[in-house]
Image 1 (cartoon, helix red, strand yellow):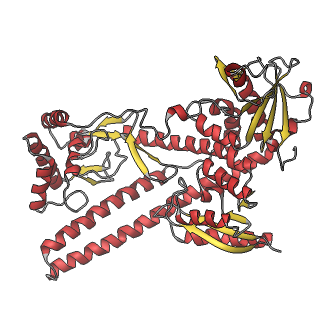
Image 2 (cartoon, rainbow, N blue to C red):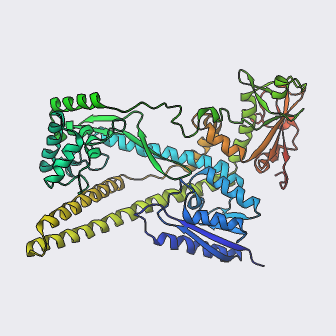
Length: 546
């Protein structure tokens, strides 16, 4: 009897072609047919980010899986299911618990190894690529080029060094706002006056007091825009998403870059200073405690890579840090109910586990899987940029047509000019915004793209795995990945070991570490053992040593 398979497809950008869903489904159907499976359900999410699991059809698929509606979930690639290692791991664990399998066309079955370790390594590589892109944007800012949206008071001008020129008419409005505020008018009163006079706001609609006042912490608003005094600022804000809800929030940047661009100055320095002093004097913002502002309270974060995974081999109680960086039996310390007085350094335990992981990761089949995944993402990124350019060009052409129709109506007297002019201005503003995005994409496309040396990059990442996973900034995520593979690590006192312990791992890590399970300790590679530790692997239920 043929296995029942559910297909899942997704694309994230509103600029991507909706046919992407059809293409993904077609590939999945062909793969299912080649495996002799029967497609019983198709799920798809359009314009949905892979950084969040809060997607309608993805959640429907999870509910149907619990009801046993199919045997296999199949997607074109892992990142279609999610771009977060934790979500992929959760999905695989849920399906495995229900006796179901998870597959991707480009890698085959998604094992715990794919979901955890390769996910962490690939995310780190993607992070490095993101840093490279950011360096390019910083370089553009250093050259005076504006790497942001169009601020009110300016027009796009690809021919200039800054990519912007002052819009004389709007610049007068900006100066008026500054002067009115400096003379004591409230932002709400200024907005009301502008609206009464029919002056269109930045988006082509009505002015709001918040548009003028902005936010002090985020440095937004007409009165806080430093472009008005001839300064280009990059990195003033950065954005992050809640992994559960997918909601995007902005927070102040750590080290914003400011470059002088005198040609963009609209407001005299004296007027800017007067406004800045008044803003400061009337500010009612309260400082927030960075401790309580964390999504997850720091006291609940895992401080070390193997926290909560280590067990005493004598009493099966937890092993916890007792002295400086040394693990010991918690039962012995708290109640005296255990005789195990031997301690071991955190570095010895972590080094033993991570060195073995590195050895397995360097195997040819895992290198090939990494290259396949990253190459696919890079190629998809290049294709996506091309699709974005076509979509922007199409949208600009549509706006041009709308503007021509409005102008024809004005010439023919077919409508009220007072109503048609604001609509024309709004379309022009929309076109400027799209043109700025298109110009940025074309500028990026002009720079030659050189495919990285993926084997070398992968080798360097794996060799630095120990340092990377011990980095305090990624310990929490790394701990989540490892805990999905290691149920427990049992430390049993052993007088023959130089550090006094034999370490036995239980769980789904056998596929990675099991090769060393039956090898005498004196024959193990030096990189696997730290300070004479014994290292063995015990297969959990349902697993066989590799």
